[in-house]
Image (tube, rainbow, N blue to C red; front, top):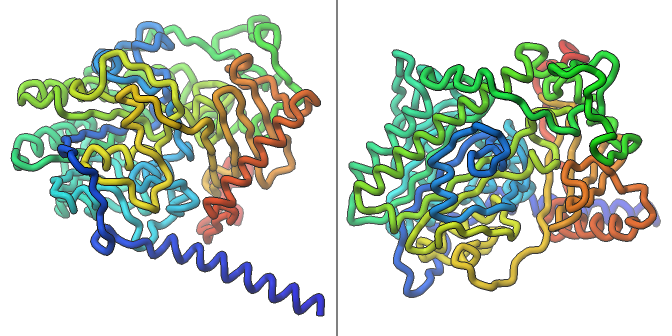
Length: 520
């Protein structure tokens, strides 16, 4: 009898899970539901500019990188709003981009990594914009749900490329037609050329939404010829957490062993650095064997800065067009990174993990008719909030399936109830096995990281007293109840949003990491 009851319970659980997964696959399209509009709202033109792997503090006005010049990003911040605490719910290209377009967490839209297919019927916010009369256009990197460059739903005009694309002489899909470019055509310039051309030819009597999705600043970095070498002598500020996992065979990065800033300069709990972090130091995404030795850390860092210059310059071209067209006061420009990027913190490069430099992104908003100059927003905003915000600008109420919130009231400096924490998820990838599945929660002061599926320690940080996230408090009895509370909140979030299942997909091909390459 006990065994029968067990099988019945398991059958019920399986049915519930299958039902939830089916629900993700069969979301109603905008055409199948009644759109709820916001009364007395004038549809506003919106330009959304996304950059790849742009970390939150690598902009001139932050002062993080001495000598870095980004005058147009600085202008967006000084003439609009700087969202100081902006985060992604998954620090990886495809999941983050899908969250931007759907307003949903990765476990809801199910595009959990860079190979996961796009579920049939997934609804993206530009589809709603089309329903209310917007003309929409997409330019750049799609890389979501597949490696294809084919036109996607929600966009009247389409310019894209396959996969990660290339920096020079790309092949673009322009409204279904393959167009090849040569003569050292640079991708950031070219995408902006297409965007400006579309703006000039659009119907001036209709509102527009333009999505400019840059390839930059994704590795491997190749700056425009005019920018190559500009930062070749740039002094590098090595983060103090970079050398906490150093070994006798580690590279010293122009510093002698005596100069390595270990625990003397910061209060670090060396015992409780996760083992996966220590091991990743010598990997594709670690400072001691980055990209399997193909490039030095210093060159990597400086080339990133040089690639960023073209992003900034082309933002300036768009600002110039809006001003010349008399649209610069009324058009909202939103600039964002799809995830952050590590430059040596914890001995790592890249993203994926839940440390600040990975999950935190730049978010700038300019629209003089709505947003006051020099606005600083400290509330925690996420990528899932982009879709409901843009829909509100179009006079469309947030659809039921969206899990984010419109931050329009924050831009207008209104007092509103807002979240006091953000949640995070990342799912292990066969292509980069050195980072485990990670769940977590971040409040204004504390961060709890749950390293799933590995025999390793979890993490708790006091961000106010430990901004480098090196003093793991998880064993400290004084923080035991806090750790328990944050972990419970994390599990409650996953349960309420149906995120308890770990997505599992067929793995093709042999392993490619340096330890087990060539094995199945």
